Each structure stands twice: as C-alpha cells, then as structure tokens.
Image 1 (tube, helix red, strand yellow):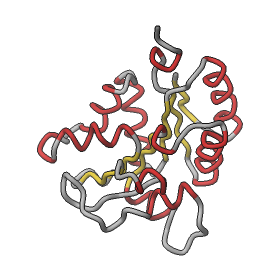
Image 2 (cartoon, helix red, strand yellow):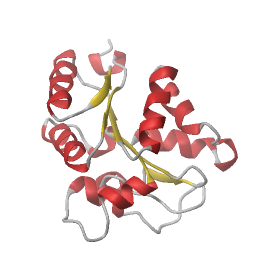
Image 3 (cartoon, one colour):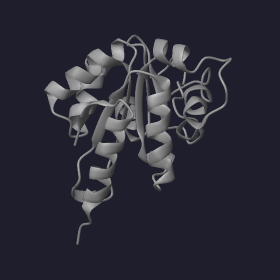
Length: 176
C-alpha cells in the first residue's frame, strides 16, 4: 500500500526575498518536515546577497553558508543553502551555472556529473515532476535572484495548508 507521500508530486514556490523564504522554510520545519526533505535552489549571487557573512544566524542562512568552501563531488565549492542540508552533505554548487542546490534535488544534479550539467537545472526540476514550462519560469526567477523551495507534501491537507501559507508569505508560481 502506498501512502499519499509516495503518490504525491513536489510542491514548489518561488520567493523574491529572504524573509518570505525563511518564513516558508521555518513553517515546513515546524510542521514536521526534515531539513533533508526540503529542496532549496538559488543562484550563488542570491546566496551571497540574502545570506551574507554579516547576517544574523538562522537555519535557512546556515544552510546557505555551512558548506561554503568545502569540496563537492562535481568540483567547485559545496554551496550550502539551508544549514541542516549542508551538514548531511546534500548541497552542491554547480560550477559554470552559478547555482546552489540543497536537498534531494542536489543528489540528482551531482549525479549528472560536471559534463552533463548544461540545462541541468531544468532537467533536474522536470525529473522531480515539475512540468518543463514551470521549470523554465523557476530558472528565470533564480537567475533574477529569487529563491525556490520545494518539498513533497505528506498529505493533501498539507498541500492545501502550504499553498495558502506560501501565498500569505508572498510565494509566487506555487505549483503542486
């Protein structure tokens, strides 16, 4: 027997600012989602802008900083987005694309290898169940400095709850 989570696709939302992304991330954590259940994607420039060295200490900020400077399986630096994900090593920086990816999505991108990363973000998002047109919207938003969060809701009730929560917190392009 499969549960809702096995059948469910990924819910994603894009946030234009750190505060909105922090509220969404913290709400996911408070509702029982583990840090390694949550995908976070942003450009390296956005990580530096939103989570620079002088900012206060937050879990999302820690995830964006903890692995900075460590080597990754595909070369470059290990870009940590949300502290906890960095701590378990599922965060990668993608050389040449300037992206930081944390969560389950990072493993898929790392597995693609440095040579196969052209269009890697769109491919990874499509592979995670996001339609190509939506993936292209997210790619454009990430290049503009936005932060994309994604997770697999455990229940339909969670999906409805987070759709509302993300809307209240200025989430855009919410998809499930």
